Length: 106
Length: 130
Image 1 (cartoon, each protein chain N blue to C red):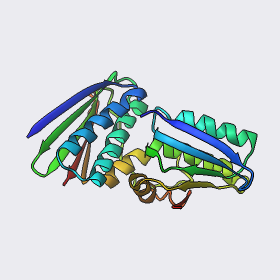
Image 2 (cartoon, rainbow over the protein chains, first blue to last red):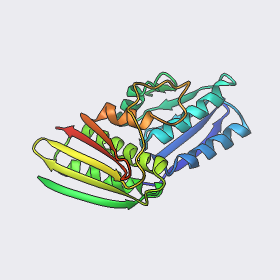
Image 3 (tube, chains in turn green, purple):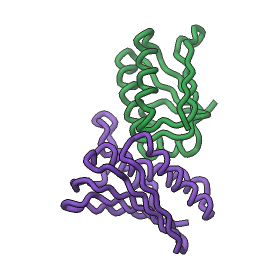
């Protein structure tokens, strides 16, 4: 499944809100990285990823997100992953990355 | 014992085809949703390793053996063998992209063997029990 990314800046929450739909893998991680970097170049604020329709992420995608977190933390911002599917939540837990990203259900 | 196989080009855009075959076979043979997700992750990471590290291999072979209470999946490349080992853990502060894929495979599959040939590529064999 192809990757789709929808984003908007929430003035109310002072953060980027990004919906990721589909698979973030070795083929598509760069596409998401470019999108996120573009957003942060425009305004470096926390990034809220709605992951309810994200079907899959691999180590390439996770590595890319770690790079984004480093960029965010440099200005005291966060990466928040919301409503990941069970398989992705398991992946974040076994890799310990649930401690690097803020992961929560809403 | 039932056998399935798929050969894909060693290109990142075709890794999803390998994931799709493995998850389809696992689903058709009655593995539960969590196990199917584990298999999807493991096959994806094994193929990623070939794409990233075995650029001299023009193809990736996926071989699946289904029998008894387990599925055994081999990801084979024909590149020059190289040394790889399973990471003991992940330190995100030091992580720069290597090791995480093999760590994931080891965490989600029941048994993992990596055979690095001297001049005939690398085979990652992963087994998942029901």
